[in-house]
Length: 381
Image (cartoon, rainbow, N blue to C red; front, side, top):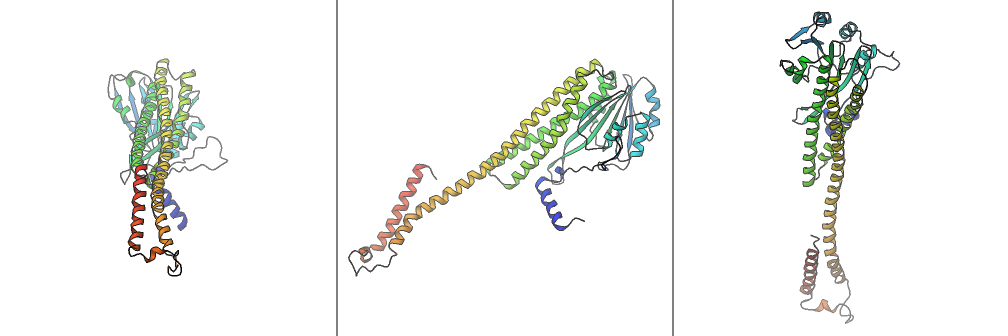
């Protein structure tokens, strides 16, 4: 059990970074045989759902299925078939899909190992793509938290398989396009569908970056007005998000470039033109991400500069006050000495003056007014 100290530390971390920023991944035990399929993610659904999307230029059908064998009639005809699998926790049910399509054991392992880095791997009978979906979701307190999950796409000769952890409608734009008879998705082959699914995920990156950029500008305005500790917490949270973003996007660029550069039989020349556009989008995301990282580091410097300026202002005021009171303290100290004027005419004859006390107070006021006037002329306050 977690002790009280650990609980307090966890609450402190959660208060600083927010629950949406804490990402934990399970790991499969060391020493496992390569290709051992072990689900390392979070169970996000009660059961694994499978849906067949069968389409060509003349029709588009959506068929929920319980067993993968029910997809055989659609795979046998000349139409294009996309089998959408949602939920990765039921290994036995997933194995029926993997074995039916004779997927390589390493593909099976990577599909359920949800901490995979984005990549593209080419096999003799399939192209395997791993992507990281990144979305902004509104939390309980109204703040936007980063929601992520792994998306795996398998491109075969006449089919496309997609695997995702939850039933999040990430592919809703693609489904709406499939309803249109004039869309390229109906005319092109499965390779274009695989491209469209990957492009849809990359498009979400732009939205997430826009949200991050808005948060950066908002924090920047707040820091210029008044630096606060909560702003430093937000800066650290943004930096963590961008680091995670970088890990999720950077390697994908090289994978897509390999599909463009290499001779892959499952991808036609016409689709490679679109893959080049996808590569350009990923490069734009990487450039924007690096720019935002620099801006976040700049926010930290701005925050520290703001605190330093506030401290300098405080020190300046204290220094001015101390400077004003130094001569006043000097005068009060002089006339506070216990020398008897009657013992010697040199022992503070002012103490015997009729207006001695008003004279000393007036002298102090004149010195104070003179220094305040001088400091204002210098622009010190």
